[in-house]
Image (cartoon, rainbow, N blue to C red; front, side, top):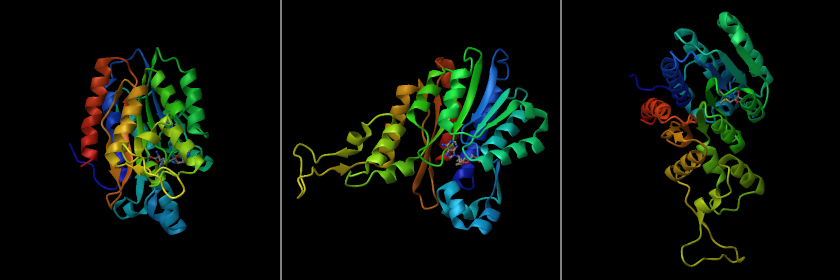
Length: 306
Ligand SMILES: C[S@@+](CC[C@H](N)C(=O)[O-])C[C@H]1O[C@@H](n2cnc3c(N)ncnc32)[C@H](O)[C@@H]1O
């Protein structure tokens, strides 16, 4: 198999696209169910990186990818996740029956609708684009679908800490969703300040992302048997939030919701700093379905981390 190349965002999209192809292949004889593809942070379809850069300066690209240092090896146009899913589906003998695209940005939704209409007119009727917050839109989606006769491949591709734990639990509760989650590793690690004195709003945000306040005791420890105190009488804490430690914690948390969770693929910028962890969470209670899904995902993720 070809190794992933190019920027980290391209590698991420390649990984999801290859999983989508394999997923459709595995599901090709499953005519009893409706197959959905759900992209909760769908974007605008295509990204014109170089013209964006020229028109808006570095900040626009940074805000999309979180790190401008990868631009040098990124193609002029990067085909986004929504178009890749449509592409994989139309090339497969068993495509998705429905596509649910969600993005909070109105302009992105309009551009995505226009690309779908021009490039995929034959399946336009299967596509719905929702300009909404992903957490609210997915809550509505999960509660209205009949999961006895539906299977879904879900991609959560946020910029940062937008995915709340309630959403993770709802998707897990479907028993029928394979969920790719791009976990904001770099953002979370950056928020954990060395002295442990985080602004209350940050602690609340991290509680929401991890679905528990116990992350604080996990990553901040007192000095051992004997507590140390600074001049103001505050207990001195030591931070241990290395990348492997945070990744293990995230996987353990996801395993409390999903019966099966893949290894984590770590996406790094060109300087080697960790940006995101990419994981597949399988909600299907069938051990066979879990084994097939994790087998494919872990194989792809091994390439991603090379
Ligand atoms: C990393 S980009 C997604 C890129 C996309 N998957 C692609 O391949 O082109 C994140 C997207 O999330 C959208 N977004 C940000 N906050 C959101 C929210 N709370 N709910 C839904 N979409 C959101 C942004 O408008 C942006 O298009």
